[in-house]
Amino acid sequence: MKFPDNIKVFGDINFRGTCAEESLEQITFFNQLRRTYPDTWGLIAIHPRNEGKKGFRQVVREKAEGMTPGAADIIIPGNPTFVCEMKRRDHTKSKWQDKQLEYLNAAQEKGAFVCIALGANAAFLAFQQYLAGRNETE
Image (cartoon, rainbow, N blue to C red; front, side):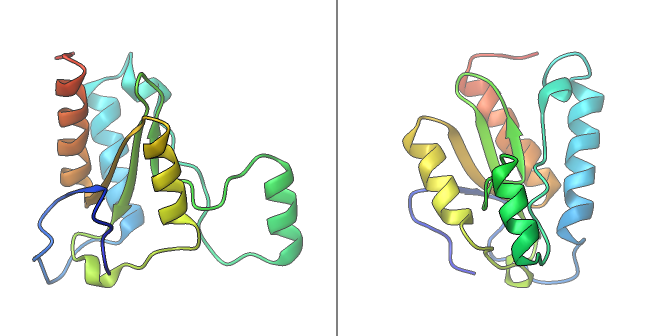
C-alpha cells in the first residue's frame, strides 16, 4: 500500500506480522475514545458504514440517502474536524477502497485534520495530537 505524501501517517509503516482486522481496531479505538471522553468526543465520533461489496441498486440508494463513497473510518466533528482513515497495523494487509484518497484530500483541502492510522493505538495517538493542536487537554 502506497501512502500519499501530503497526509500524515500515524503508526509504524515498517511493521509486518500478525495484527487485528481493521474492524476490530476500529472497535478498540471507539471503545477507548468513549471511555476516555464519555461526555464530549465520545458522544459525537462516528464511523460511516461504507465497506463491503454492493450492488448497483444499493449504491444508488445509499448515494441518494447521503452516503459518501470513500468517507473515512473515523470522523469527529470539531474545529477543525478530525478525519482518520484506519488501516491494519501491518498496512501490507490493507488496500485502498474506491474514492478513499479523494475523500481524504478533499477534507484536507477544506481544513480538516486528516490522517491515516495503522491500528487503534496509532489512531488514538493521532487524536491526542489533534487535541494538542487545539490546545485542549480534556
